[in-house]
Amino acid sequence: MNEAKNDQSSGRKVGMWTSIAFGCTDMMGGGYGALVGAYLMFFFTTFCNLSALEAGSIIGLAKAVDSITSIIMGRLSDTFWRTKLGSKFGRRHFFILIGSPLILIVYTLLWLPGGGYWYYLIVYCLVEVVVTMVLIPYETLPSEMTTDFNSRSKMSTTRMFFSGAITSIVTLVGGFYIQLMGQHNPYAYTATGVTFAILFSIACLVTWKFTWERPVSEIKATADPNEAHQNLIQFFWTALKSYLSTLKVKAFRQHMYLYLLGVTAQDLFSGAFIYFIVFGYGLSTSTASYLLSLGIIGLPLTPVNYWLFTRLGAKKCYVLYFGLVILGLAAYYIMYLMNLAHSTLIIALIIVSTIYLFFKGGAYSIPWNVFPFIPDIDELMTGKRREGEFAAMMSFIRKLTSGLAAVFLGWILSVNGFKSGAAVQTAQATHAVVYTLIFGTGILTLLAMVIAVTFNLDAKTHKTLINEVDRLKAGGKKADVTPKAKKVCEDLTGEEYSDLWPVSKEKEIKVIKKETSYEN
Image (cartoon, rainbow, N blue to C red; front, top):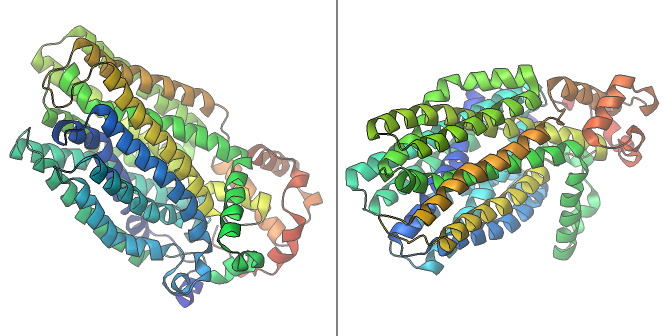
């Protein structure tokens, strides 16, 4: 995507086909996470002669390495338009394009059996780095392409549809391969990995081809000219300060609390689920895979998530979905205590898993519906567009918590006597799996639900904020702000209105033509 094409993108409407082209890359985001969460630790401990603690440490260390990549990638993506490659292919699209062949290679290598600890550590680090290199620029596209609340919500909902669909499909396909090739055949996991590596690679190309970015002319108008002449040390120091400054945004801090608690809870659930089904209920690995795939039944109801988000707002949706997730965990635990007959247990698990996975998916989709609106709040505070840095900061902290969840699960299993490759575990090891899945997931989800009550970013407050930013861009005076707009802006930013909209940016913003802004 060259600069000329970028400059023509202003005002383009986001239709359904564009939303689909955008959303399909989150098959990699959701599918990659689902494969790793459901199978990777089990694959390591069952077929790669690794202990639970070694398996957890591989995932944890790779996430730690990748968290650094997240920090670098966000800043790099935001400033990449200054380079020849960035001006030709786009500051976001360049990374999506080169990520396509790279994910095909490294993700295939991850699922080959017979490697040792260092092989899997190095390859998994490469996988995490490549995925982050694609997803951080990718996550900025809704903010790049439009400022319209409904268009962004439509894009985020489409993205979540693909993510939710693939999350169910990967375990359905994985269960099929495991059943076809044998419960104890490591190459069933290899076949699953290769299949989806090909799909992820194609999805990246579709998004690269059919989406666009913010015009380079608009980026230049508000860019800091001093940043173009920074050396490497200055670049990292500026990046570090800029990343930390994202946490000044009150709505972003609340958003991060909710996101991290919610997804870390699901990291524990996903990592422990196959162990829970196999050793807690005494069922097969393929049965566990098929149960995880049941979330696909809820896909026709995905528009309901969008409708609820636009009507109820994030706060009420969070409370609703988190509450239902906790009820689902309670149902799993009751079934475990009841020691049901096999046929009755299967039926009960199908019902509970279908309901649980649907509402879990709904809870996970809310942060990605909310995220595109966070940079708008920051623009009121700084006068800048920093979508990449917010995406990177979100990814950075997310990687750390995800790694800690994997290490925690591996440590819990190890200290409670879990034996890698064993067909039967001790009562102590089994209880450790059950309690981690039920109470670990439940407590984190409950904390998130409590925090959600204070979250006030929704369609109405966002519209009020956008109108105020547009008024100031057009040369409006801060003294003329309405009481309603003042209250909303202060609540979302966490700062006094008098401290918003930096004076140093007012002259720069005025040179941006009104007609270059995106449709509202």
